[in-house]
Image: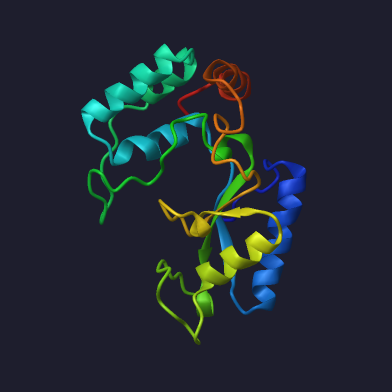
Length: 191
């Protein structure tokens, strides 16, 4: 099912479409698998590989930092089961809900489909190349921030608009993030 790119910040959406076209030109077909995420979707991903103690610490951090809405979302999504191949501690994301660029419409995740078949590996070569590396390299030339170029916590499918790691690093406070997320997603925050 195609991912709706209309929820992305317009300037970023244009760059994503250009990035995908440039990848096709390099015979590296990429498909967007994730764009805008609600705080609840981010909370579910964040909780999946964390212990109960880590979850409680995350909830407390949000509450103590002036983000009661996001704390309630993180608590409200409930426990999340591990998916095949996941283990506790093999975190899928570093960022709590609200503090990821996906919730701001400024990040996408893409998957590589050589020959029309999904390939998850960032090390496997097909016809002498790895699509995730090509994708990340092209993104960097477009002044986007590819997760595959991060020095720690490599996230090859991820590309974001901001050079800052997350909204907190960009100077936003938890209280302002909480207010913005509540305004954007508060009607049904657990969707």
